[in-house]
Image (tube, rainbow, N blue to C red; front, side, top):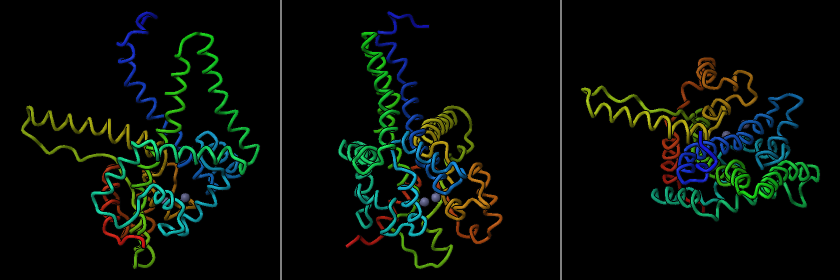
Amino acid sequence: MLTLSEAASPAYWVALLPLTVLSVVSTSGAFRAMHTFVLHHASHEDFGRRSRLAGDVAGIIGMTQSYADYRRDHRVHHAALTSALDPDQQALAALGFLPGLPRAAYPALLRHTLIHPGPHLRTSAARLRANVSPRTRPLRSAVFLITHGLLLLAAVTGAHLSGQPGPLIAWITAWLIPLTVGHHISAVLYALGLHAWYRRSPAAGWAGFAERTGARFFADPCPARLPGGRPAALAWTRWWLRLILWHLCVARLLVIGPTDNGCHDAHHADPAGRRFDWCNAAYARPALLAQLPHTKVHFWHTWSLSGAIRRNFDQLADQDGIA
Ligand SMILES: [Zn+2]
Ligand SMILES: [Zn+2]
């Protein structure tokens, strides 16, 4: 147990760093899940009569769209997937992710989008305007300001009364950074691997549809059998580090979150959830493939978040640019 005097030492903050990073990552993923899971399934009315309420509350907590706005946009996403009308694709286009760029331009654009303050400020400002602006319903703005403002007020009051910055630092790391910086990073990494954007397939029906939608799974093959000793230890160390740090912490906790969006193709195949049990997506997708032979022929998947994004960059670079 650390004493109070130790708590102020550099060693204390160094010891706290891994836990702080894990907290920021998981809270960012939870904020994103308000949009990608709760609001998304509310828009499909998966919560029955409480869908509107669930969607609006999730949108306020995650500082994203209202139920009505998301539902309108998401219906277009399903009906006009990867077309110029698709609002999800328009959001990526606004960040500069357009087809027909040189292949090497996409990773550079991704780095810029994740690191440069400009895209962070623009996306956070747009999300704030969706909750507090003259166009927003007064009730929504009031609930948003109370929800988020009370936490800030509590942090400022705690810092003032204690004479220590601790409560304010806790608010910044536990709420502000996940809600803004973490949310933006998660949203960009999520969207880039979600669909084969701008793809207009000449194939009809499911063949064409499946070209634009795949599943994302998160793991590496086990290392090949090595004759023991150092090479085997290194291979397994790398495998475990990637599993924990990349596949679990980044892909699962930060980007996909506690959602069914690793199996997004199954959702598009059955948006109403008649056959696809979205609460148990990892098991329901193979079951859906078994029930719908036409999906089994065309469905595909990538292993790892980076694999899904690289695949998308390849197909974006192969396409003609937009005139
Ligand atoms: Zn989709
Ligand atoms: Zn949907």
